Length: 294
Image (cartoon, rainbow, N blue to C red; front, side):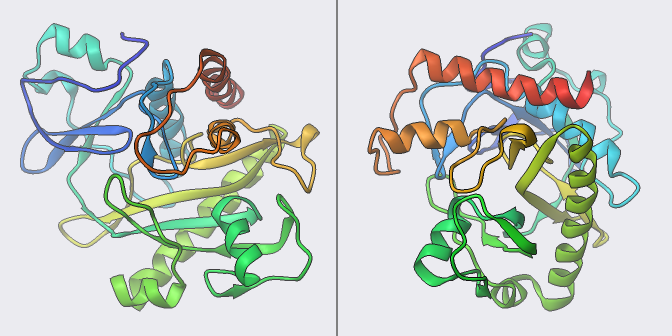
C-alpha cells in the first residue's frame, strides 16, 4: 500500500477520466474502477503537493457513509470483485485501500449542496447579494453564522480547471428537470439531517456538504463519487466553534485559509504547500476518520 499517490498508472486497464482527485478506469460495459489519489484541489484548481494517505482516508470515510445510508438510497458500489480484474500485483499494491469498483452511471451535471452554516462561497454570495442561490437570508449574519434553517444551494459542475458556479433551484430544474431536481433536493436534505445527528454525538458540527448523483441504465437515482468526506464537507469541532471566524476544522478549509493568506489568485500555476501545512492537513483527515470509525 502506497502512502503517497499523486497519479495512478494501471496499464492493464484503460484510463477514461482523470478528475481533481480521482482516476477512473474502464472495467467492462457496466463497471468502472475509481481510484482516490492524494491530489488536493482548492477553488477548483489542483495543487502540485499531495497529502499523504488522503485518498485512502477518503475511500474509507465514503464507504462508511455509503453503507450507513444504503437504506435511504442506492449507491455506486458494484458487486464485482477486484480479483475479477486482470491487474498485476504491482498495480494492486499501488491502489490498495484507494479503489472502489463502481457501476457506470450517467452523472448529473450539477452538484447538490446543503448548508447549515454560512461559510465559503455561500458567505461570499451573501456579502455581495444578501442571498445565496436566490435564497434571501437575514441581515447582519457573520462568517460561520448558524442559518435559521438548512438551505439547499446547487452548483454547476465544471470541467477540471474551471470553477463551479452556484445556481438557483430554478436553474437546476432547467438543466435536469423539475421532478428529478426535487428528488435530488429531498434525498440530499434527508441524508444531511441524518449525518448531522450522527456527528452531533461525536461533538462535530456538519457545516455544509456536497453530494453527487447519477442515473443508472434503468433510470434509478444513485448516490455516487464520495460522501461526507473532508474534501466534500466542512466539519467543525463543537467545542471550539465560534461565530465570526473560520472555525478550526477537520477538512481542507485549512488549505483554503493558507492559500488565501499568501495572496494566490486562484488560478494556475498553483502554489506548493509547505511541509507543516501538508502534515497538519493529513492529521485533520486522519482525525475525522478516527472519530467516525475507532
